Image 1 (spheres, rainbow, N blue to C red):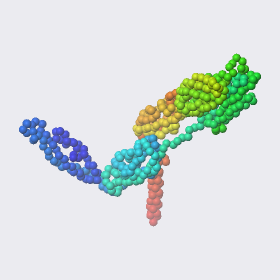
Image 2: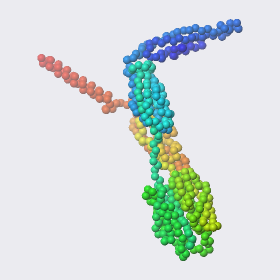
Image 3: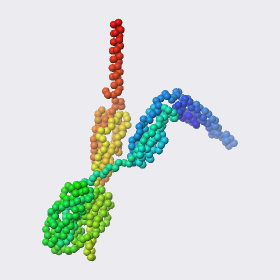
Image 4: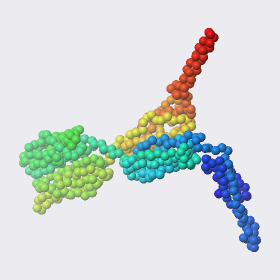
Length: 487
């Protein structure tokens, strides 16, 4: 094997600068073979075309680094290491001092799944996959001499824990909101049910009504008005409805509606009719209740519906309720059957729209960015929350020379010191069904390559102490000389 750094070219010349692998040795010897092949041979002399000779070469160094001439190796990183989070990038660099760089790192125990140790840099990186409670990492480091002796190596046990991402409690939905805008008319002498539609809030709901006639009853839990207008009660009745949710929050605006009572003249007394012509809009991820309004027929009724969005169902009372988990517009076919013999049926084609409710878009990064330095790489990652989670970042205003924003990263190599905080705005936009946009002002200071030490710097403190000490010594010397002169 040739010494590191040397090469043999096809013409038989050695080139390069030899190196010594083990810095604790003064001399290393290498033995190698050299083959030479003749290019022009006769058929009879083909076996004599290649020759080999063995050689030995010694590589000497100018000076030897011996044990004891350098500070001993020591791992500076303390235990425990910063906690990791499952599914999030982990990056911690171990620190050491002493010995002769470069260092070589090793972990003799098993790292948590998803993490690895870079032997040349001592950096523990990766994305943890499993929960780990106080894993003990047996870490060892060697200096460039690669000797297992005191002073040239050090080891330490470091604890590392991996936890699942924290679960943030979902914010409570807004207070309940009554969606019913108008009440259907009623027919004298016929049974009726009027359901009130509501969204948001937390189940169960409690309804209250004022101004209702004696023949009208309210199901306080389901929000359904039931009753049979007596013959001769034609006219109009004004009622007011209020709903509270399980958190005792009342709807911001009560419902005030007018009930019109019509006579039976010219109408089929028992005809079953679906009075609902439109369903209130629902919101993705928010509780929803929308009863189907009926007139005529004979209760109890049986309801069926097709093409409901996922998360919503039809209950026995004829209310569409639940929490939708898909967005879009859905065409529903509703069928109602009463209890007469033969039974009456009523059908209606209703449309239900489910809209998305995105969280407000906010920039989380602190407005005072870390200081940069001329000629040194700078990088800051901006973070945001809300919207649909897909962001487009841009800068408004003049950035320090050498810096730019791309994909939420402020990075580059500053070329000019700002002298004071440079201010600029960063905007983030979230696209999708409900596009959002927000911005925030940031400030950054770019310093010179080497700033002058401040008055509080330890360097000035030592200079001051030396000056004071020299003055004291001078004063003592003058006093001794004067005393000697007096004698």
